[in-house]
Length: 303
Ligand code: SD4
Image 1 (tube, rainbow, N blue to C red):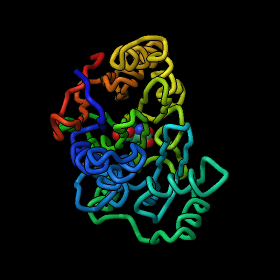
Image 2 (cartoon, rainbow, N blue to C red; image 1 turned 180 degrees about the horizontal axis):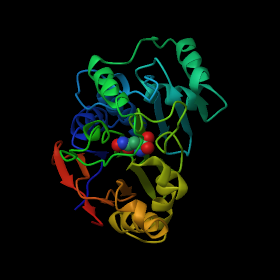
Image 3 (cartoon, rainbow, N blue to C red; image 1 turned 120 degrees about the vertical axis):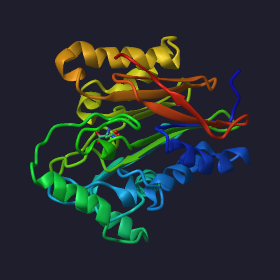
């Protein structure tokens, strides 16, 4: 039995984001408002996740550069990429959507816009993230690390599983989604992942459903992952099967690469049925609805 409203989010810490989003949904509020409020939770400093907003991990030059996007039930969307010194990229993404004629602002232009809109400019590198970066600099090897919950013992692994992707359906049945991250740890300066790219890291179609992704963004961009998942649901696949098919495409194109990387998709359809699928085990997601606000589910995986 599915019930509306509902909100689902990637990874264990999605529980805290969902709880905040639920406060809006339970009052009959709009899914878009629930998404923004929820995504702001991991962007805050007090959640010890390590790659979202204020706790973001830096790029290889020591800059914390943030990626985020948001999409509503009308197909409106907004996005910021490689934005520095602003702690709440999800809110800036929404401002881009609602207050500009554009969809995407990047780098200094995104920061400038955020400041013009009244957001505070601040230094974002936490002591913990700075320490991890200095440790990484000793070898400065750029290889994407595995992204699993509670899992990776590879260097940097614990800093690389924390993109939050959220999807919500409100009591009226309208769908919105959001995504926010500092991206792959120690990426090249200026690198943009899938998370702020509409169709890659997030896609919502109010007639069908929504999808979001986490993991190695390059592979998600190459396959226009979240758009693919939504289109597969349009053709009748369940959320889990649609996510599985999108994962299979990535594996089929690059089987050797896929053995060593993580990509996970999370999806919800118009009825509120949800599902996920990942390349590697260890992808979890959180669900909140009228029955439970702290359900955590282990996503199925190829390996
Ligand atoms: C990226 N997809 O920048 C993001 C990283 C991620 O969990 O999801 N980490 O490629």
